[in-house]
Figure 1 (tube, rainbow, N blue to C red):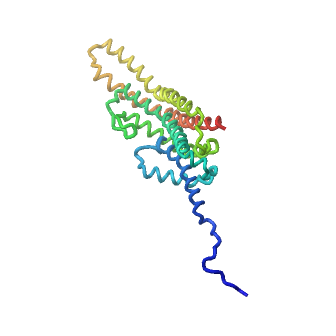
Figure 2: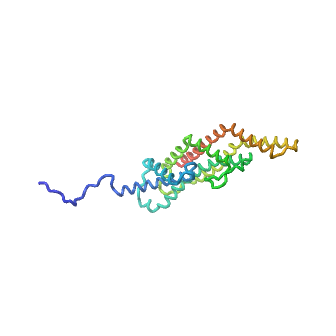
Figure 3: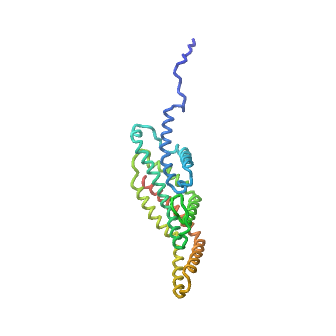
Length: 273
């Protein structure tokens, strides 16, 4: 005989609709997006002030959604709840450290442009740079745009994000402080910034040095020549001419800079294994 079940009988739980599982997924997604968000805020181009903050947040959430399934599983445990603040701080430290390292490497173009501008008399041609909030020579801004173009054309942004995803295999989401190699990475980037900036500005500054020596000899032998009416146009035209001739060399230098900056981050991950 068939006996109907009462209306209050317990139903089998539907898969995929448990609230606890949903909270765990959202919690793990939040933790995985912290490192990437910190990297996007502090990295060159992606962290530019010209990009709205809302766009950065959406971009970080979208990328975090795509690589969320590839990172190690993070479940809500007692340890995670008790150390939630330390975990958040460590995740931010790792992301900001990697982003600032690339920013320091890319500052070589700004240093080279400022030295070129001061040597050629183009230092008066300045504009407000939204990145620094101060007056920056136009030559530096042009070199920065040139470097960003080469960085994007070489898929440097994709490689940097891929390194960031692989960092979850080395530096787990467990709240433990990262090794001191991050500090050494920043110091190495600062030294490479001055070295690379010197190599980039060397053709222009070297040509102007020889031109200034020749102009000094000419003005010494002919005192009636006015220094401002004669030397300034010559050095200005020579600077543009040397910049035109050394465009390929500067582009190769920027490509090498991009390669070395990404290799330094890769070396950090290899040493952390």
